[in-house]
Image (cartoon, rainbow over all chains, first blue to last red; front, top):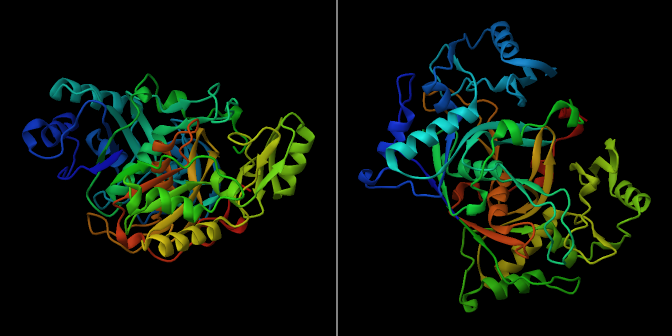
Length: 236
Length: 236
């Protein structure tokens, strides 16, 4: 399996057509890294949010305005400590500050999460199939903290062309015994791998993962398959 | 960056010297995949637990015996639902059933977590340096669930030769503004990438990640850097 950073994306605005942009960068004529059938293209949320116009005005120093924006993007506040809020977003993600991002945006603005990241992924996948004739999967990534571990990692907030969860229940282990509780979130593992070549401080907002098991390329979405419903959840 | 499965590990027992085993498989004379300076070798907990004799008798059908074993390996029980217990292990990990594993072990036995996975990683790293003359990092992986997301992913429970957290606080984003709250757990992202080529049902318990940023190869451990202390934690 190999992981490749996508260079040259540059500044993205509400006028950017991401399908056209990635088709130009990753097509046959670009002379560099090329998208191939069976690749997974991982794109950070920031780029999607910018292209979809999900940028709002926000005075970064105004904690009240920030809190109001977080509440607007949330359906539930789980915890609050100082200026940190852990909320459930309108999509059902549980994360810090409703996923609102103040880095790598213009001064005086903030990037909100895409309204429907699965739809964003489906659209980019369809555009690239139309423009380049490639059959790939697309994942939209974002950076989340973890309840009991220091440090953030990138996880998948939207996907298309891949079943995010690999269901191994019923398959046998090397000793011939049935595996239990083994639904692997390959979408999140792919997204984590992609982040290793992107780097938060750099302007590399996309990566290609090549060599995934082709059986993973099936129906599914993050919203349907990965977000845990509140009634199944032991910590909400 | 590239990710390679390590084939041929075979059955591991308390008599197995893991340093010798991986040196034989991954040395110059093996004629296949070779460990090189700057590689990260990810090894699953199961193999480490077996080699360190952390296998105990357990009747898989005896829920009381199972619960007693989980309590023995834990310092705190956070939640309980049916036969599922979320506990804090003696190491400080918060996970299902104290990380005790019933798959890929002999009938009537269970694999406990290594006593000190950071030490296990340091030992294997030192052995491979001595036997092969290579300067690599070693990560011990395990499979954990996530609070608010379906599906499990592999995370790092022990490490050596790598700083698990990449601290980007104080560095600037592409707009020249200081990044906040950006300590990336690269150890967990590397471990997730490794799992993509291992596969739970197969007998591939190790992988090599090549092409990591060499600045990550610094002091650190999972116990010191990644486990969140209970007082910093909003959900214990």
